[in-house]
Amino acid sequence: MFKKILLPTDGSETAQRAALAAIDLAGRYGATLEIVSVIDPVPFMYFPDGGAEAMAYYMDAAEAAAKVGLDGAASRAKAAGVPYNSHVLREHGPAQAITEHAGSSGCELIVMGSHGRRGLDAVLLGSVAQKVLTLATMPVLVVK
Image (cartoon, rainbow, N blue to C red; front, side, top):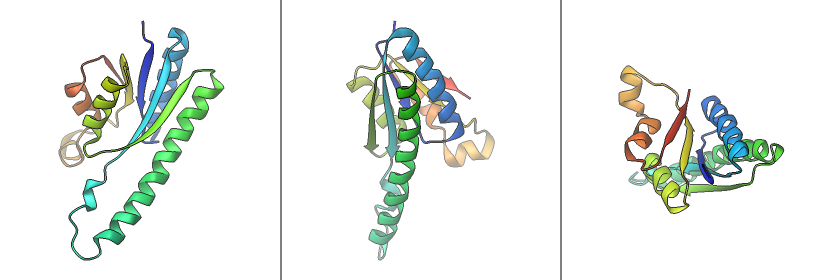
């Protein structure tokens, strides 16, 4: 049914639970797992004086966090014998980057975690999972 499954990860607990579900599905269907972590470089793009230093600090921290998330999911996939590819996407708008990568890499399913933000947190922080559900042209499995 599924030949390629996209797993976006930020290394969080919910992303780790989504990784377990994605790896299980990939193993059952003989699918390849496409593991991605998105780094949005825009937050510091327009800072005046000192912006380059803030951007460098942010990018270093974001790259380290992405590596942790990717390495964790990749090691679980490897242990389960599931083939995988992993990528860091450096794009503005994580939901857009996730759905575009899913389409361009031929994924038939997106499996992702959701922090379950509600109320003011959802308004201020947004919900990447909700935006992916809106933008995706393929099925999305959201793990809480």
